[in-house]
Image: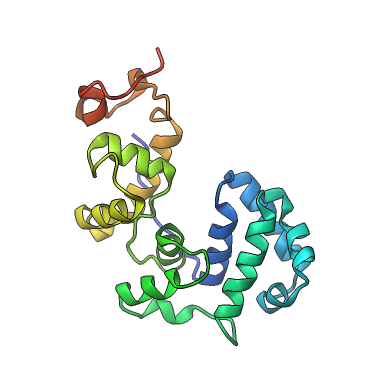
Length: 205
């Protein structure tokens, strides 16, 4: 339905960590504008960490919730020590890497998973609102599953080589026909959709 996708990991875990924090509760466009504003205002991650918090907040205001995200980014960068580096995640055992990331202020499983897969191509399926909605409707995990449970279930059922492609396709499906009010008449997965077959969704007519 959505074509073949291949991951091109960029190898910069700090970039991915900050970008994902900025993505919380906003659109991709707002996230990207906020990230550009941050990088234009500060020349290094150390400068971001040490900046007056109001200056950081001003630089990312276009992303929304800047008063929360600014201090959170500074707290994360401060926790990483000197030099600010996450390259060591590349070779650490998966569980250890996830635990280290989720121990950072405001970093949950989705953010940790984004760092692992987009920076290093380490198999993860970040569960955002789209993946959670589509996966629950398709029966990949319980519709009422907590995000933590959904992460575990998705990893358990997904071949490592397919993790990136499945993640991206679930998001595309969630942004397309499988919206909160789904367009089931347009959906190529309708016949295998647990929620549709059980009459548990109210499609747009």
